[in-house]
Image (tube, rainbow, N blue to C red; front, side, top):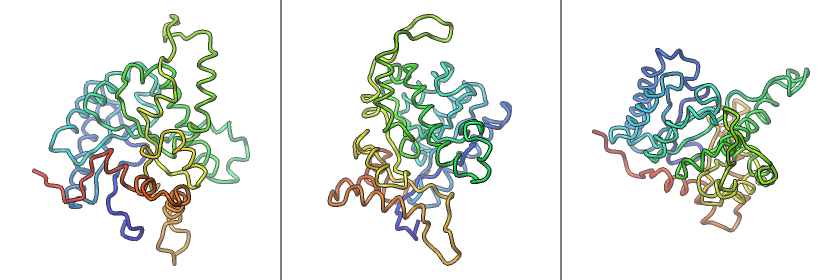
Length: 301
């Protein structure tokens, strides 16, 4: 943080979070991790906040209880939660997720959706291993996010929970570029069906409206083109700087700066050039407003 002039950070548990835990252990581990995050925030004297994690393999009632616990004043350093794309095991479009969406909406908690599972290795072909992690990280992760959000949209999650707030990782993946195509396909589709095969109405709100009212994007795209696409899609006040830390560390022993962090900062500055207000917003002001980050040391009881 000091190396890159970052005043405040929002931390979260890295993927795969607690998704791998057995149901009998998940709730207790979520409490332990979230308590530890809260302690880290307290000890930082206002420099660190956090997104909590949820025990997604536990019973739904336990997950909702953890959401409500994190919304109490004792956990005011927790300013949202982080979710992978698998949800309870069947994706974020699973109707069984509705009690979670309802609780998160009621508590006005931001949901940071981050990829982990990627795409099947068959998609990348037999030669994927020759380039290490390049294909899964550069394409698999963003496309995983794109598909997860689109699945949520198609089953009308945002119609049922119109105040739900979602932050999509990696500038939304392919969402900014493909939103128009998705909307065209939605309008031309002749029939929508529920899980039991009964015909239902498709999404009521357009994907553009959802993106401009429910969705925030981080600016972790590593390019001016990516940042600009995110800004054009959701508006400059809904794009937030991110670091990808602790992944992509300095490339050489003599380097102090993380190229990944510097690249994203430079991309934001190149996007806004003479728009100082927009630049300041993406580099920090938007997060301060969205998450209610205090610039003064936190007081904990």
